[in-house]
Image 1: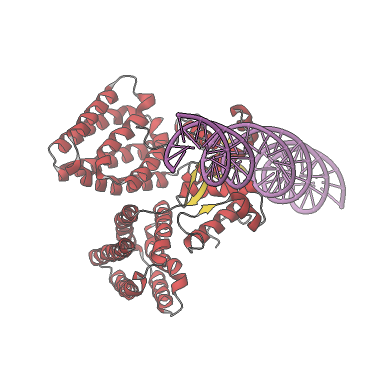
Image 2: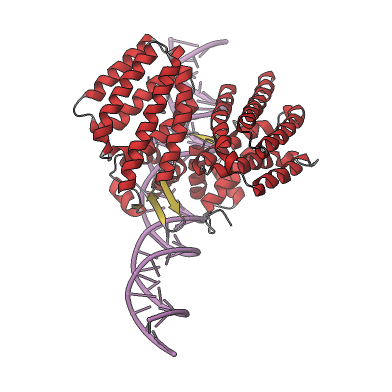
Amino acid sequence: MDSGLPVKRTIADQVAELVRQRILTGQLKGGQPIRQEHLAAELGVSRIPLREALKQLAAEGFVTIASHKGAVVAELSIAEVGELFDIRLKLESWLLQLAIPALTERDLTALEKNLEEQRRPDILPRWGDVNWRFHEIMYLPANRPITLKLLKNIHDKIDRYLRLEVTMRSGFHRALREHDGLIAFCRSRDVPAAVSLLERHIRDTARGLIASLKVQ
Amino acid sequence: MDSGLPVKRTIADQVAELVRQRILTGQLKGGQPIRQEHLAAELGVSRIPLREALKQLAAEGFVTIASHKGAVVAELSIAEVGELFDIRLKLESWLLQLAIPALTERDLTALEKNLEEQRRPDILPRWGDVNWRFHEIMYLPANRPITLKLLKNIHDKIDRYLRLEVTMRSGFHRALREHDGLIAFCRSRDVPAAVSLLERHIRDTARGLIASLKVQ
DNA sequence: CGGATGTATATTGTATCCAATTCCATTCCG
DNA sequence: CGGAATGGAATTGGATACAATATACATCCG
């Protein structure tokens, strides 16, 4: 029930997880340098597991490491954000198409339960997680774990920007409406309509985010 | 001309590159454990950069690290290989579609030059590289660097299995013919035909590889 | 024979030291 | 005065030694 994750986790893994979370939540902002000694002292660990964690995060694309200059929190250009949304578009519409015939009643009620949570007034700080979970529930029956993990990584990279967007306010209710529509099409097993709506959903989100990035 | 790679590379990066190559070329086989002390001594480095390299390779999916048990060269199940081919199918056909209108005469001659190299009798040990380079030249004009890097990673993971397949012999000439046809459709800017052929090309490769994996 | 125990081995983590590189301010010189 | 050279200071990268921890395997005993 723990999704196969190792029970005993090394310090390096815990540090990687923690730093990743700090980046996702904006505690560590893009472009910000990460001082090994300082962060290691703050976390109460030595530099070696921290350096291993940074190597891992670099491979995942959350930080960039320049030799002898250190790690800095990665920043995405507008073009890169757009590209990530394009990848989402291609892979998620494919997963949804595969998943719909395999969706169970349990999945559909889980989606509705998730949607209720999205409507709660204090959702904003947890929006990234809950929103991803919604998409994940839809795609899980497609039984494509590698693709799903890849998409999770992309969502994580994007959500950091989505999180602090003013667009959230305006795009928020639109997202809720589209999620609602997705559930309806999933329930009626209308693959073309669901895929079409999902593609519009992703494109809308991309357009809103990129527009707000450009004005800054 | 060095594609922006850092000139000064750390030992950890060099070790990661070397171990990755050993995995790709089959010098390190799937399931084989990697003993830190032994490998570090063999390479003449300490364990610290080696461990950082392994963390990076783990994040890239080339090894799996189990806590206190060590790193082992990752193995792909048949289902996982199939899934990777599916991702290739979706993303590469999209990139090709974007790239064809932007292909220059220089690109097309580069493709032909690459195809000549594919026809050389001593190509087999370099097939993985040359084959990827062929696809890369086609997709570069699409100007989607993140997607391209992602696909390169997938190619690397797959090529390890392709390399040692008996199918190579039978699938080899088919691949050459399909590459030839792709150049022709690219030259005539026939997007639907090119994409259709590329999809068949990827599906054929997948089918051949998976069939040969199953008999083992 | 089966389970508990102990031991060897490998990984993980810490501490310490040193080398290499980058950054930055100061100095030197035309 | 302006720009190049220089010389620390700070930081990262790497090595070594050692302690802690977990696993695997053999052994012992009831």
